Amino acid sequence: MTWYAHEILVRATPAALQAIRDSALLAPFAYHLHSLQDVDWYLPGHRHGLPQGGLLVIRPVCSAAAQGAQWHEEAILDTTSLPLNPDTLHCLQADIATPLADQVPETSLPAPHLRSMLAALAEQLHETVVYYTCGMWGGDLDFEYCLSYEPQETLWVTDVAERGPHEKRALYQALINIGLMLPSAFFAPHTRSFDWAAHRLT
Image (cartoon, rainbow, N blue to C red; front, side):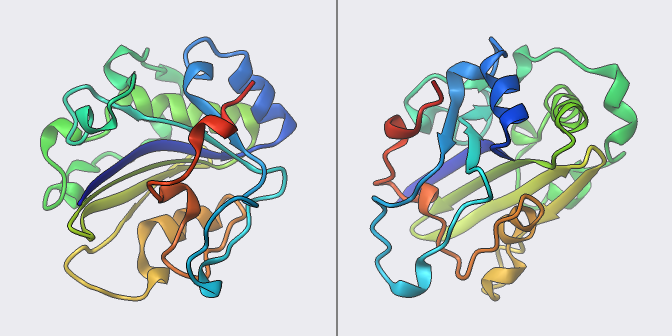
């Protein structure tokens, strides 16, 4: 079974909610997760909460040429259309292509335009901003990584060849920085049955 995620994650503070609502670019793709009461947790050990104030998710966000872009079957925020923010280029790592080369095709690498925008958003909100992307096939990870901005950029990459504990996954490491610690590898918004429409930002 194929599954992809390409999304921006940030704690839903009042300032973040207002900034995203005011953004003609981001608002059409934004969701505010403030409750998980309708989630089917499958197992008691899966149950997790949300950061204080909830979680803002902007999705799907990727290049139209990225692996999995067409899978979403909905409009994407095409990162090739984003303006470059030169004021935050100094926050970006010099080379993220090398650590991702074994997992991610060149067309799926996050562009400096996206990365500089996320660093600028983190700087504006005084909040950590995370970009998460993942691809799965048959229940196994093909690739998974997170970029975290404070606004300095940090890259977290999951070793998909190693079936280690969930604490070693990129998503777990990145979510800690926005106030969410997962007790297992289960993350409710990453289930096919998750009702995104119920959480659209208004």
